[in-house]
Length: 410
Image (cartoon, rainbow, N blue to C red; front, top):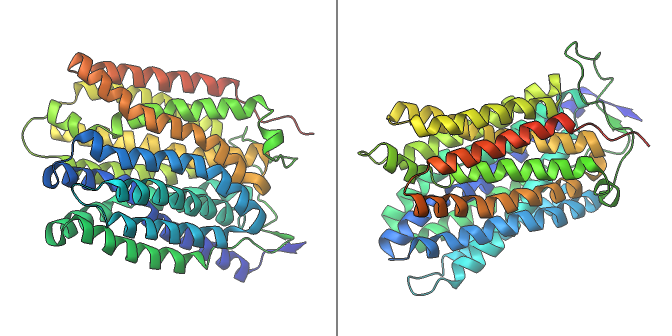
């Protein structure tokens, strides 16, 4: 067994930085609202037409993650990340062939190819980075790596808006596609697993804030994982909180119009949500390293339930911005906490496929959450019932954490 060295520790941070950089390109998914706005304003598409490629991308993101996770568990992360970056970039380039009367390239390019490429790139980054660090730091490292995905909108949204204004929609897809392809593929070459027998240790003494989830004593592959109650509890909690989060995130611009008439707050709220999203991933990772990921989930879900209820009282720009940040923070925390919990419960060796299977619940929640909020608003002319439903879902998820314990060692 090979213990850590200064060069090994440095290598781990290089892998984490490369994963963060790759996720900065994959985060184009969260900036779709900028494209959607342009498609409706400049090409005359309906809201449903402009939303369809995004919905397809979310579905493929969720479905391909499990398959890509299994592949990267077997052949390593570098090839999977390279393939993901290539597919995502080519998908953006194919999207540039779309025209006002020809939407199929967007569905195929952004929906299918980008959605699948994002899944492959995403699932190859954080498991590889986490393996270079001890259990007591994996929450922090995972949070840092996936934070790139959350904060990407801060630069992609204004860049996309400027490119569309200057060059039009097709040239924007082409420019971003070429740039993202080159950046993601180059960074993917740095994403590797540690050599066999490597360990970053010994681990420091147990933290005084026990009980923390103990390291798993058995590697469970997906066949074993899905036979545990813990897997299905995690799947259900992920789906409930994703459904609740996307209900709000997917309609935040419209919420601003309804509750704070006047200036267009769309870009501001996208940026605020992105900062909160990234911050939640890092902070939740740090906290989970100290008190355990499931206990951290309980606090995050409970606070999130209160936050979405308070949204109904937000009628000023400042109040809405603060609550938008908190919504993003809670949603981002999930993307850090669930990977850590899957690794703790079922072992890091099969984290790719196991987390990919748990992640399918995010896809279900993501696809139907925004649709549910829209249907509620159409039926009631108010988002308040949607806030109440989102709060109830978060509260149920918080209650489920009370029944979630690590699997028995075998």
